[in-house]
Length: 230
Image 1 (cartoon, helix red, strand yellow):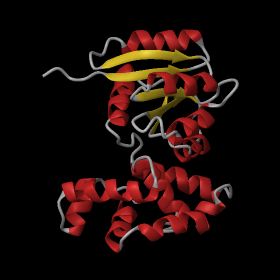
Image 2 (tube, helix red, strand yellow):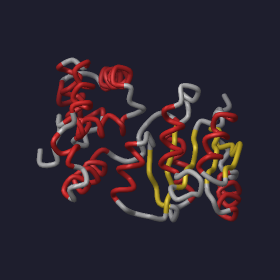
Image 3 (cartoon, helix red, strand yellow):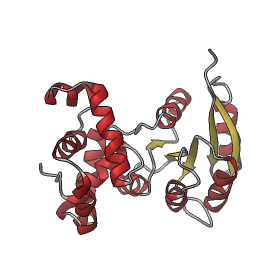
Image 4 (cartoon, helix red, strand yellow):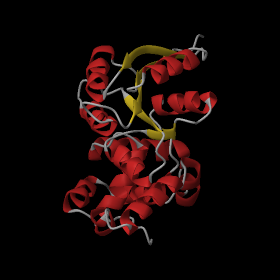
């Protein structure tokens, strides 16, 4: 059975970078670069037109930043199956946090190997978060400790309210996810199957309106369910 290709939109303000990604990603049989965008606004319009599986998004672009474009794409009811993988030259925790808050499913540096980027595209296309929860925790801790994330550290009313719809078991699973546990580890700790964990996660995303596992972790910190010192 032939694997269905992952349809990718590349958004970057540098033509050389865009064409480079198209050429490199074109060597992977399971990826099809279906479009290119020169700025954030074009990334949104092209995403709406092409409905790609993954948008490879730069952060610093003219007219509309990659983070704002990510937010518009992930919040659009017309793009339920489109995921965003952010690529940047800036290894700054705050950028990672903001990208994930905006709905990005992953974050990678542009100097990553082609194989790593292609693998990241596949992971994100499958609906999984590219950044491991343990790494994400370090990001949130850094953001909170700098004072910019005081809301995340103390818990916001809006985020706390979002957790009211979760059952006790779902809150328990969310705490473990936010502390870096994968599905297998959570299943072992709670004496349930990995498939059951996956089902709970899918229900939690539906209840809270979160895009993927990465967004659930952000919600756990912002609500105060999990704190940086916990």
